[in-house]
Image 1: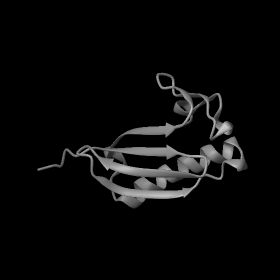
Image 2: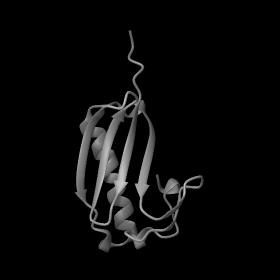
Image 3: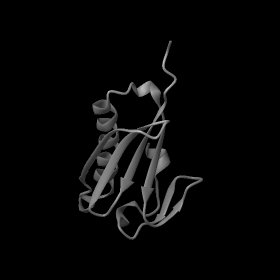
Length: 104
């Protein structure tokens, strides 16, 4: 019998650190990794770092990428969650006015 378990990736963005986790549909954390945000390196580097961390977490989790059904990103500030746009981020001004959903 095939497993129907599905997974999601959660990415928590902080001014100092970012944390990524792969979580099962049952709520179990399969893999978690924390790295420095290094936001001072600029917008492009920050977005690349976010992407690399999420890809690394999936790879290290052992979960098939085809079983990942979503990605959630949390950040402080004013976020337009329907469009995926960071309007204002006090902790990460590099992300102000960035459409993160287009990037991912």
